[in-house]
Length: 363
Image 1 (tube, rainbow, N blue to C red):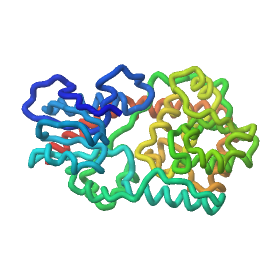
Image 2: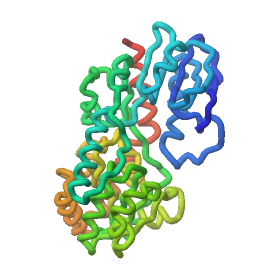
Image 3: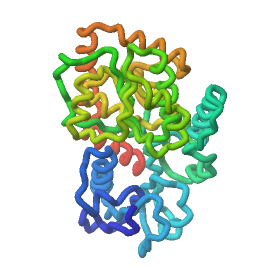
Image 4: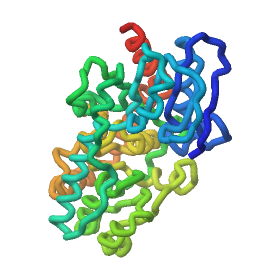
């Protein structure tokens, strides 16, 4: 992360100013846009805020050493934990927005703890959590609105915040991944595409399922390597099964990802908590059929959902989908691509942010 401020990124001359606490990387160097949706979205977010009459300064969300020298009329903040460091730089009537890409902090904590306890019961191993019990749920109460990636279920996790002040934002897929060639699709091939942590995302559950179902294939494209204890606990399943391929982190713009998505039929994510899962949108962009938990941020008409995320239910569900015909696979693959093109494109993200800004400023 860079410790600096990117001042007036839109080069405007308004009387009001906005502090965007998010990521500075897209504003200070050439980047590879497809590495993560937020790299493009950060620039678009700053542009849209500027269109509402604000000069936009950008800092990194967790930067505690940046030197500010003005007071702001609007704060768009991805990291409420350190709000106290910046309050003296906010005008008395400053509008404050929590720009959230996740479910409510303490809800996330409880969800992950339940997964870790279940893992301990099954395997006798204690793994470190990604989330800690948060005190900043209280901080969120002082924000005037939440711009939230997710659906109504995601919104409902913010139990201590007025739902009418939570405005839903659309995440985005990738148009360049669309592949209409379904001739090589294998109904027995599933892609797990995620970042970390593996237990939160449900890789432990999938490994247990696929280790017992040898006729199904799991391609694991996630950042599991740094999670040494997880890899040790699941060494047999992750590294020693002929039907489980531990690929690791993957460049979605590369040839290997293209080969995988030509063969795999499904992207599967039994995650216990998300905002609106970008990895699922990535898979759908390439024509993979989504099979996900109901916590991934999508409506039921857009994806196929596990009834629950027990090992037994996941196994039953995936075996069912593996028996679908080539015609069904082809039709659903096209449907996934169309869902991205008509509901999760750049224009949809921009429109949702603009609608949220209008509601915020109308209050």
